[in-house]
Length: 394
Image 1 (cartoon, rainbow, N blue to C red):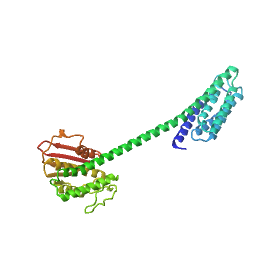
Image 2: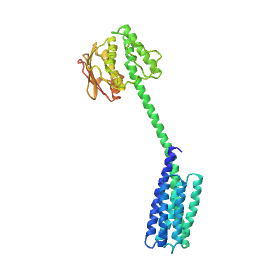
Image 3: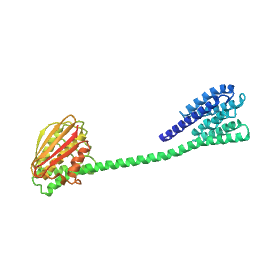
Image 4: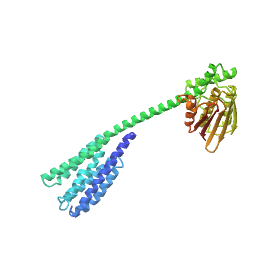
């Protein structure tokens, strides 16, 4: 039995328990009213009420038919005692107690007797037996007709409740499954979009930068450095095509052309060594970078990747747009934030002229840092150079 079916059974059992105990309490109150039933009958019925209540409590805790049968037997015995012991019930409270038992308290068993052929057969037998016994306690045709109508209605209502719950659960299950499929589809779309954006950023920061150099005949860059950069970009394209993240080889080692593996997991990599590789990359591309401040900073690998890639994009913007061949990078840190200031004394620009649709700053710097909880701020003016502040959490 799957989880949904189990929850449906639990719901039916709890509903039967609450329904039965409620009307059993009403029947007991009617019975103990002065003159409602014969004192001897009341004394005999009190232990039977205890058995009835126990059976109804247990009926709400499991699927055993034994407790259902015990509740029916105890309730039927109470009705028989009230009718045939002593002087019999009075026309008011005594009949009310019997009716509450036969048409409501014992009818609660119908809620757990609507699934399976055996249970339905027991439901039919219980309805006929309890109904007949309850009707026979009535005096006169009119009173008997009224009692019979109440019994029929009393058993129809819990049966309808059980059928309604049983029919509604599959619909709920279908809707839950539909919501689950929609959630998975949305998550997959989000993951694909994130992967697309990451690939677009990497292409912009590497391949497109190299193509721009080639378009300008590699001005300011040595042919050997340009070939090395183009080789790195070719490996990146191959890895993206094969569906794996790019891997940065260790210093002095070449990456096999067919190698594809996920990014190495580094809890707290040394930032200084990686900053040196960034410095070497831009040195061979004609941009001299002066480093100031902290030499080594420990960061989680995901945050470090975003920080270095955003920093490299800022330096690439200096190389391509500032009109100068020197930049300054100052690394500072405190207990919660690592901060990098990238400054140049180039031509500068009007910040309002930045196109939000461009990948250069909006995606490769701002969005990349925000993905890891960081931030980027830009300061520039025509003729006054540019300063970019990059911040990431530790």
